[in-house]
Amino acid sequence: MRAGLLQLNVSDDPAANLTETLARVEEAVGAGAEFVLTPEVTNCLSGSATRQREVLQGQAEDITLAALREAATRHGIWLLIGSLALKTDDPDGRFANRSFLIDPEGAIVARYDKIHMFDVTVSETETYRESAGYRPGTEAVLAETPFGKLGLTICYDIRFPHLYRRLAQAGAGILTIPAAFSPVTGAAHWELLLRARAIETGAFVLAPAQCGVHPTSRGKQRRTHGHSMVVAPWGEVLADAGEDPTVMLVDIDMAEVTRARSRVPSLTHDRPFGGPE
Ligand SMILES: O=C(O)CNC(=O)[C@H](CS)NC(=O)CCC(=O)C(=O)O
Image (cartoon, rainbow, N blue to C red; front, side, top):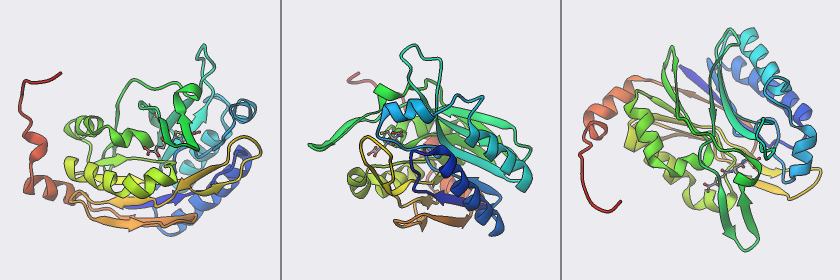
């Protein structure tokens, strides 16, 4: 299976982002991708809740979701929309940070709401309070594809290894981790965390990411780490997209999952234990 990961530098203008995303999908398909993946918040990255309320839509109206479903059908590909920021019926007006798996008929075969919220003070000048703007999800999601079972996660989820263990033990051979990682934590942790999750689970990790300085019309300026990555089940980095927007193609051989897990079957070696709760 050939995967095409889109590394994007989105703005807070969903229509403009969609034009760029569709062109990149086209590029990936032209290069033979059968499974195309986009980063977290493919539709809009903003540092302003006011701006988000102006431009974001609910799932039923969202232009990015509709157009990407249509693109999946037109090209006959599988498509992971890393996530969309979407309006919800949350009483506090919070958005969903929701990932979608689309099949070649354009059907939504799975959707996942990011569970873990990035409420972190990275430095004195850089603070994130994701839970103020987004309503967290509560369910882990596994999806069937012709190339294997897929475990859907998003960005900060990467720091919660029990989620990945659960998905892998439920059968996932591919873990998707679309991201908009912060530059500071990205430089220190991103590659190491991706490789750790791949090794612990004996699964492929596919991590399409946002990159660069994001053009925003108002509010806080956002910057992201880039370095979209594919990691093999044994832990090798198969590809790293660097810092700039691009399409990254990687051939995935699912037999590597079986090979890694038979060399080190730690996924099947859990033991009950007592001790601190
Ligand atoms: O804000 C939005 O609209 C979209 N969401 C994001 O960019 C999220 C929350 S701020 N970013 C992360 O989870 C980065 C995690 C990270 O960098 C780490 O774990 O170190």
